[in-house]
Image (tube, rainbow, N blue to C red; front, side, top):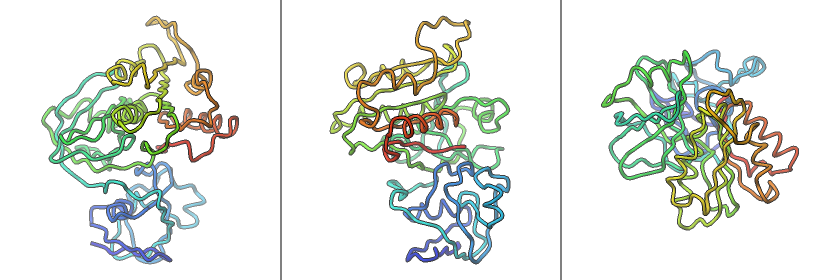
Length: 335
């Protein structure tokens, strides 16, 4: 156990030997800055003022050459080798609503969603507590490090954690999930994490923009709002698929009680290939949203998940072209 002191802050925390500095800080309830938790986004940068840490991923894309030259590190990729003094900026917005914890879960069900996406359901002891839109870190057998996957269900007393995962050709994490783990096998799940969770206290209507396996957190948000009896707004759900064979959101949304009254589904295909018939809209998901919504974009609360290019295009369109305040746009960067 190492004691981590934050320069200029009254807060310090104890970090267990198996935890990164980010995990230790969040488990202590501190507002450690972060987004992806796996070294990709760079949001958890800090400076090591004294002490020593082990770097888990030297080539993590979250650090630029300039960051490395200045001695910056990633809290999600650093394990303390003893007591440390670090410099970082805490934020109330990053404080965890549910303290992330590690637990053993067992694979209980697998279901195909599309030709290359599956839903994996794990069960563990105790309730599954998380906010719609959050993710968890999975430790998979034979796979170095952890993999972050978004939850597609909502909190429940049964201890069920569900993920919709797209297979990545050559990806070690998805290869393990799709080919090597059998029903009944156990893994370690650490969570919940993520700041792009639903905010039902905000009265604005919600727009969910999803692409690919970004379906999972947006589906969780739609399910969460549908189950929130005190929330009376509308959810406009837009799913961007590459081909007609990738379309899968509407059958999942149709099972929700708000479908058709307060929950509205729209799908667009970017690259129709002719193998399956498609007579719906063609193009990009944010373009479909702007053509469909009947109010000014700044009237909505936006949640989104999908490929990096999609996320950047949506940000540019909403913030630059339509003056949507950044605080009304929620996403976790995984690039």
